[in-house]
Length: 355
Image (cartoon, rainbow, N blue to C red; front, side):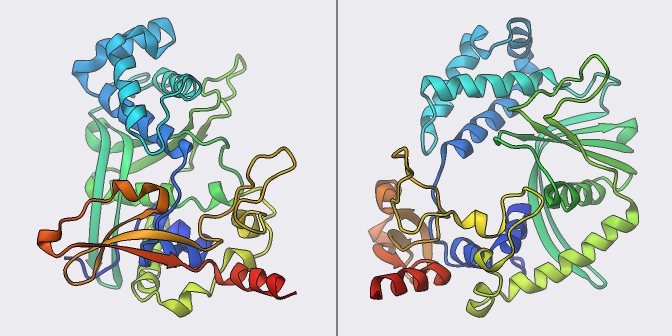
């Protein structure tokens, strides 16, 4: 077992964005809210992995010829099955149409990486799990690469990451992109002969194709190549992050609240904006729809499954209690707990109630 907390781009990003969300989600394992965006993304990634296999290329050809996943009965059925299994499910007509658009967009953009030359190796859903102890470098990082293409006998690589979000990256999301850094580092470690790694982010809700003047589509983000010095510098940065998160405690949890950060000037979803503007749970907008807020802003009850030693195995919100499975014969138990809310807003709510 690793002596370190296992790092990932999302884990590090969460800690940088808000220390309390990190403390709640990763340390205390308090359940997060699932959303349809994540469900749609999961379905699309599964389909891309499925179509990345040579034996399924006939379905790829069918979709490209027709411009729709509905042209392949087998593929259409698989998408609906995958969509119905998500939490929350996304098997309604609107979500299916949106996923059809995403998948067709992704397949149309050089899906097999052979538009210029045939890859030396092509891999879908490449998993990496790196434990590094080299001199002053000490970290454990893992992740998944949606598509990895190796060229020129492994000396050149293209990393492709599919995004189903509503917005493309802006500002610091481009300039300080953790995923790109981790991807480049991982490829260099896994394939030491590789001298050049280029990361491409494909935002599937936007046009990926170039216009008549050759300008790339809004949905395509090609990252700058990273030098060996930049990658090595990132390794030392990872070592510092590793040290910080390995010893993350209740004091650190309140040290970098999103609510206490300045409002972003680069249009990123960060700082107080990421807390949401609802003053209490269930607050409605003028149109009657619920106001969005961070999952960890307000108090709520949740359920946990504990093992015989009292260690939490799994968690779920009140409405998802039925998804939890436990075995009494092994000493496992089901227990209801209360999350008390973000300290920043808990104080605000209590003060308003005292008035």
